[in-house]
Structure formats: C-alpha cells, structure tokens
Length: 420
Image (cartoon, rainbow, N blue to C red; front, side, top):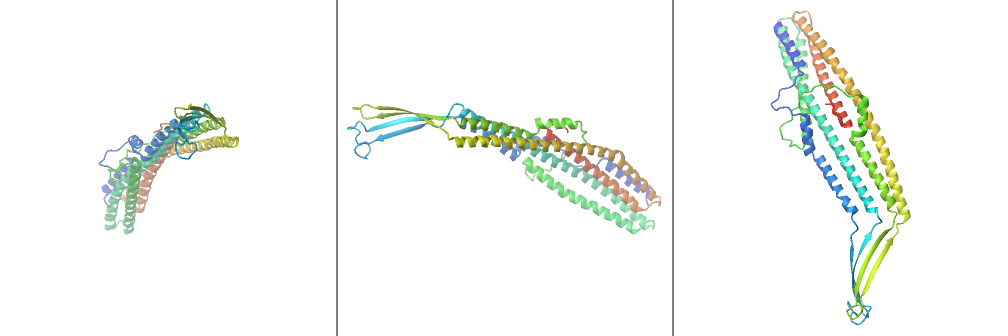
C-alpha cells in the first residue's frame, strides 16, 4: 500500500471540502442584484402589470367628464306625411334644431373619479406584488443554481479523491493486504457520486431554463453563473421584522388600497341617490312669414331608492370584505415572517455547528482512519465510511447554507428590509 498516495488523497479531500468545491467555470459570476434589475425591466408579467396600471389611469377622465351632449333635428309636417308638407302655408309646420346636456348632481363625477383613482392605485400596488413574486422566484432559482454549481464542484473533486482511493485499494488487494470487496465497495461509492453528478446536471438545466424564462432571455443564451454562497448573519430582531410588515409588505399594501377604493365606492354610491338634471334648447323655424319657436327644457331624473340602497349595501359589504381580507393576509404574512425568522436563526446555529464541530471532527476521523489503514491497523470499509460521512456533511452544510439564504431572501420580500 502506498502511504504517500493515501495521505495525498486525504489532503485533497480536506482542501476540496474546505473550499466547498466551487466548480471552475469560464463565464464570470453574475450578481443576484443584476438579475433582479434585469427582470424588472424585461419580465413580461411585470410589463403587463404596468400596462394595466396605465390603462386604469385612463378611466379617470372617462368617468369625470360630463355625459356626451345630444344634438336634435326635428321636422313637423302638416296636412300630409310627406316631408316639409305645410311648411309654407301653416304656422304649425316647422324645422327645428336643438341640443341638450345631461348634468349629474354636483359631486357625482368627482366621486366616480375618486373610485377610478383608487382602483388605479390598487393596480399599482398589485404591480409591486407581481414584482415581489418574480423577485422571490429569481432568488429561489439563483440560490438553487448556486447550490447545484457549488455541490457539483464538491462531487467532482471527491470523485477524483475516490479514484485515488480505489487505485490504492486495488494495489493493496494485489499484494495481499486487502480484500476484493473493498475495491468493489469503493467502486459502488464512486458510481453513486457519478449518479449525483448526472442528477445535478439535470437540475441545473431545469433551474437555468426557469431562470432564463423569468428574465425573458433566449433559452439558447449562455448559462448563468452564480456567485459563491456566503452565510449572511441575521442582524434584525423578530420584532423589527414583524413591525415592517404593515408598512412594507406588498400584499398588505394592496389590501389597504382596496379598502380605500371601497371607501370611495361607498361615498359614490351614497351620492348616486341624488337627482340628475338635463337641460335642452330647441330652435324651430316656420318659414319666414310665420314667427319662429324657441323651446327651453329642464328635466330631472330621480334615482329609484331601492336600487340606490342596494348599491350602498353592496359597497358596505365589499368594504367589510376588504377589511377582513387585509386582516387575514396580515396574520398570514406575520406568521410567515416569524417562521422565516426562526428558520434563519436556527440555520445560522446549524451552520456554526457544521463549521466548528461536525465537519472538522468528521474530517479528523477520516484522516486518522486513513492513516491507520495505511499502517494496516484499520479496515478499508471504515475509510470509505468516514469518507462518505465527510462528503455528506459538506453537502448538508451547503444545503443548510442555501436554506438560510433562501429564508432571508423571503423575509426581504415580506418586510421590504435589506437582509442580504
């Protein structure tokens, strides 16, 4: 058995795992902030939501403008149904032209405009919900891609270490100092790593495709390379984060805007019970030998009380519905913030345990077992066991790291705070 080669394998493993195995890539890494800015400008869902807001703003002048004026042409025949019959020999026949204008009760148009403005404000708040949802998805894909790229490097480097162990175990077996099953077991472990590498490639392609779709990039564009995962300390307290929900949470802002809209709708519904007016003026010409006619009209429309009361009741119920929706969403968001805080805090403790306890201890046990095996004082199966334990702990560390960063990213979406 070549002692030098075994110790070299141990050194390579320690170097690979301590560096967390970031795979070398040709393309430079892209910061997450750059992708978020790109999505805000290019994502079709965000663009569609912005168009919706601009369209809603155009409703305001439509509902605050007076109703369309009416122009009238009249022709009255006398003695015969033929056009202009009696026009020259009867003072009852005439040709008339006129105009009329409906005049809603003062304040109605303004209140309708308030409703339209509040509706546009709600749609604007919904844009922020869309942006936050897209940003959440991009962060999740980015962190998943970072995890896959980082763990792929770990797997490949440990595949090389395992190749060296297989080679040394084979030499050991050939000189009668080991068993064939040691070599076979090492080969099985190597096959498992190859399988994990293949699965990582598949998951990376899926994450790349979804992320490019969110960015509105061509699927044939170069793959996105992430920055290294680094643990971000949680520097906000639970109470601070919970206090930010009411002011900064996008869904809460939508619900609050919806309540303001319903308040405007209720005020408008009450005003709709007032009468509307219409004024008109008609000029009637009866040929020059007869005197002309001049007619002024003034109409009043009285809304039916049953309909108005139903509109007021509907607006009142919808206002209550909006308030309860806000209360429900607020409790949901507060619960998510608390859950995210607990998750981030507990993952932070786990990361410390991995760094300061589990991984160094497992690595030390592996190297001690490897050294003992080199002196024929330990079985090779134990070397493989500690090798696998160390590899799994490093992979678990990266998974915990990405879970921690994902929890912080979601807390940012819920509270509007900058945590990463």
